[in-house]
Length: 415
Image (cartoon, rainbow, N blue to C red; front, side):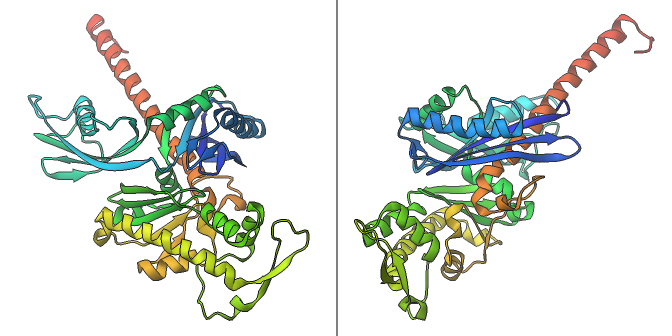
């Protein structure tokens, strides 16, 4: 344990809470220790609707992974989604005024600060921000320019904005369990850590996270997220459509979708004439209906989701620069024929995003449904490594200062 760091992630989704804990070892890398998922009705589309129940559900999920893993930590990377989330790309410039023109860490911090929006609409706050690139005298780079020589430093950042009330309620629910937020992480960013390679991010690709209550659409280009949009529709909309369209319970609607549902099917397909068993309200015995009725209810919702996705991608104005295809994650992405339907209408190759980069990962977790949750571990590991490097750099500066002091006091003596 002394040579490892504990990483805790809590994914606050539209219909579920998932908690994951792992260890980051210097020699063995990142190792999964425990993962737990529980459904919740206390949170809808990422927004707390019942504070007490949300706290109990988070406590249940958190306590479960802590007990099974045997680890201890109360600092969490919290993954969030929600229809109130919006994003914007921002740019800022700074003249380097040091005599030799060397860029210092204070310059980088200042130009990043300038790029962040300072006048937000009432009820909004910055949830997540990330540097897309630095430009020093016209030279583009994704690495820190500290130590380089130049006159004009520019930066482009991608900023995710959210509802102040939404964040405040999440913090209250977490505080009741004595959990502290290490960092909020937008679900698209965490999912990207788990399923996208460096080549995917650099060449450009689209990442779509199909959740229960929302669908997040993101464009990665130049190594980072460059556009994102949260759509207010998700996989649970199919369940509600089947419930009302067939006159069945919500649980029966979920069963029908899982057993027979498809995002799309050829209207001339013979299987549409097959009969399936269904239990209507108020009846103990099963009745029979044709599969065609399921198709007629689900197909319009698929078309609506596709329309939202196309509008979002058009709004990004980046598709001409994107060389890669489309990667889908999230529990709702596993709906049969969804990938085929997207590939047909978006004219891009579509693949399922499978999490990688984590040791001891069971086969049941190698699924698009766990991409955003497991991505919190990978994001947390990177963040912790950055903090560790900063600490080591600070310690190194202190050591050098002490060495200089020693030489001034005792010149010519060995240190």
